[in-house]
Image (cartoon, rainbow, N blue to C red):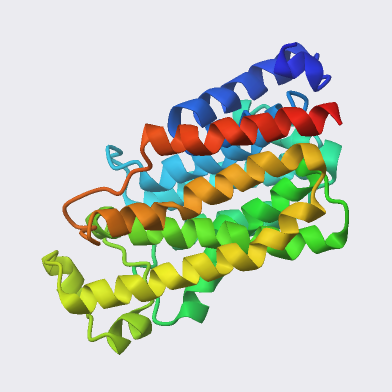
Length: 301
């Protein structure tokens, strides 16, 4: 059955909006999209809507081909973001992406504050280029990633309130893994997301990173960051059992693939300046196929 039909999304304008969100997910979020396919069809459109919102905002901020200045990007993000937030409050929107998001928020009673916090972090990206401490970084990570986990839980089906804190931790782990992989790309954007104080503990400065020469000090710093991702992943693992059985395979696969980014960093000998750590198609299949079997089994039980 068509996902939109399965989800009971019949209005033509809404279907158009959800279809656009799905397109954004399939085009830009390949691992995320793969994990989404492990969900029952009636849940998938709502996950696409969350992704579409996040991706559209991210495009405003990080489109390197854009000729907009940071001030102009901030204005564009503020204008679009306020329209979506007001749409959530009023229950209506003319925005193609916002329409599906608003429908999703209303169906699952997702707190509006999660989206306000997300937009706050996106705005930070336009002015903040580094973070002194881990605590400083967490202000950004909470809005950019942790709230994504919190937004997802109502759709996935929490069995208890104990599902929420692990979801927040897993969202944090995903983002920190991205920071480790993307050190070089983030430098291209003028940003360093690894906490400067923690880098300094290993004798690493921002200037050393900008030279893009892999040193024992930088490797040591990356190893420390990788250990945190793995710890957060382990701490989040019990929370998966607090979700509806038909949703667990999706999150298990997402956890394995996203946090597995740090495994790929190790495989390229930590050279995040000259190589991009990628999850291979073989690994994706090794994770996805057993997860698909578990997903089917859960739906039939």
